[in-house]
Image 1: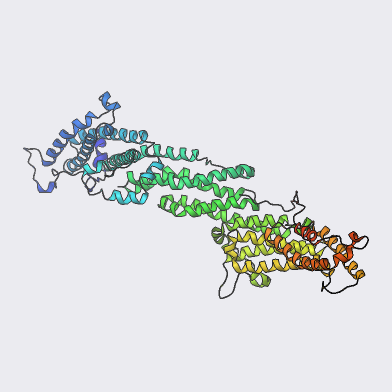
Image 2: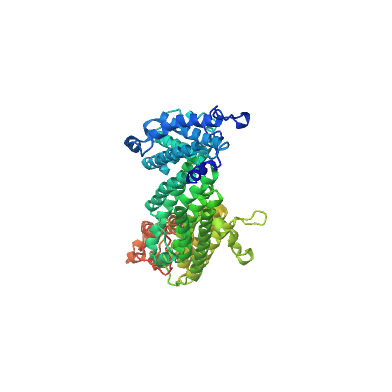
Length: 631
C-alpha cells in the first residue's frame, strides 16, 4: 500500500504535459491503436522502459545525495545545454508515467519512475532556490523594471509559447544589452522554466513555497529600508507634528518608489515566472505583496484620522492625496486580481479619508479667518500680517487646484444670492458658469477683503485707511498674478481689483495732500500784493511740513504703487509751486526775515516728496492670526 500511495500522487494529478509549453516526443501515441500480447511487453511498457533508461542517468547524476559534485554545483550555471536535457527528461518521465498508468496503475515501473521523479524535483527545488538566492541583485525590482514592464513582459512571453524547447531556455534579447539586464533575463527565463516543469509534474506547492519565502523577504526588507513602518492610531495621535511631518515626507518618497519600482517589478517577475498558471500567479503575488502594500497604503488613513486638524497641516495631506491619485492607475494595474481587492480598497480608503480631513482643515481655515479680530492698525498703512499669511496660504492651495476640485466637489461655495455683486468679478454667469474651484478661491479672498475693510476703520486718519486698503489690495493682486490664482480667478477679476487700488490711492492722495495743493494759488502767475504772497508762502510752508511729517511715516512696499503715488503727488504740487516760487522769490528775498517766508526751494520740495513711503520698516509683526502656512 505504501508503494501504491507514493505513486498515486503523480498518477492522479491533472497533467499539463500535453500543453504546447511541454516538450513532446513521437514515441507517445494513443494506446487504443494497439493490441497487447502476454508474450511480449506492451507499448506503454516499452515507452516506460525507454524513458527510464534515458532519464535515470541524467537525473541520478544530479542527485545531491549521491555525489559531492551534484551537491555543490549548479546545473543551470554549469551547463545550459545539460539543464535543457534535464528538464526534457523530467517532462518525458512525467508524460510516460501518465501514459503507463492508463494501462497498469499498479506497475512497479511507476513506483520506480515516481522515485526518480522525486529525485529530479528535489534537484529542481535546489536550482530554483539557488537562482532566486544568488541573483537577488539581478532580480531586485529595480532591475526587473529596467529590463521590462508588465505589459511588455506579457506580450513578449506569449511569443515563446509555440517555440521549440531549446529556444525557451534562453530569453536573452538578440541585440546587445547591458550585462545586468542580460543576467536578469537569463535568471528570469530559468525560473520560469523550472516553475513550469514543477507545476506540470504536480509539485506546484513546493515551487511556490520557495518563491514566496524569498521574494516576500525582499518586499518586506525594501519597505523597511524605505522608512515605512506600521504605526497605530494612538502612536500617530500622540506624535509631535514635526516628527509626523518627517514620516509623511518619508512616505511620499516611499510611495513613489514602491509603486513604480518595488511592486511593479515584483509583479513583472511573478507574471513571468508563473505565466502558465493564472491562479498560482495571482495568489503568489498577493501573498508576497500584501503585508508590505497594506502597511504602505494604510499610513495615510491613520494620519488623516489621528493627526490634529489645523490649516497648516493641509499641505502634507494634499501631498499624500495627490500621490495616491496620481499612482491610482498603476495601483489598479499592479493589484488587479480579486485576491488583491483588499489592497485596492485600502488605497481608496486612505484616499477618501484624506479628502475628508482636507475638507475639515479648509473649513477650519475659513472659520479662523472669519473670527480674526485684531484691531491694532498697522503703522504707516502698511501690509497687514493677515494679508500676508492668508495669501501665502491661498497661493499654496492654488498649486493643488486640480485635486481640490475633486475634494471640494461635495462642499460647494455659498449660494450666489448670499454674495455681494463684487464677488462675480470672475465672470460667472448662468450661460458661462465659473468653475466651482474658482468660486471657492474668490470666496476666500473676499472674506479677507471684508476683514481688511473692517481693519481700515480703526485708523483715525482716513487718508491712512485708504493707503492701507491700497497697499493690501495691491499685495493681493501681485500674489494672484504670480501664482496659479491668475488662471483660477482670471484677468477680469484682476482688472476689476486693480481699478479699486487706483480708487484707494486717489482717495489717499486727495485726503492726505489736498490741503497742500490748495495752499497754492490756482493761477500762480497772477499779480499779487507782497503781503498776499507772504501769506501764501507761509500757508504752503505750514501745510507742506505738516503733510510731510505725517506721511513720511507711511510705507508702500510695492515699488509700482509707490512710484505711482509719488509721481501723482509731485505732479500736483511741484509745477504750481515752482511757478509761484520763480515769480515771487526775488521780491520776497530782498525783505528782512525772508528766510522764514521762503523756506523751501522747488528742489527741496521734490527731494522731500521723493523720499516718501520708505519707512520706518516694521521690525516685529503681531502674530494674532493663529496659523502660519508651511509645506
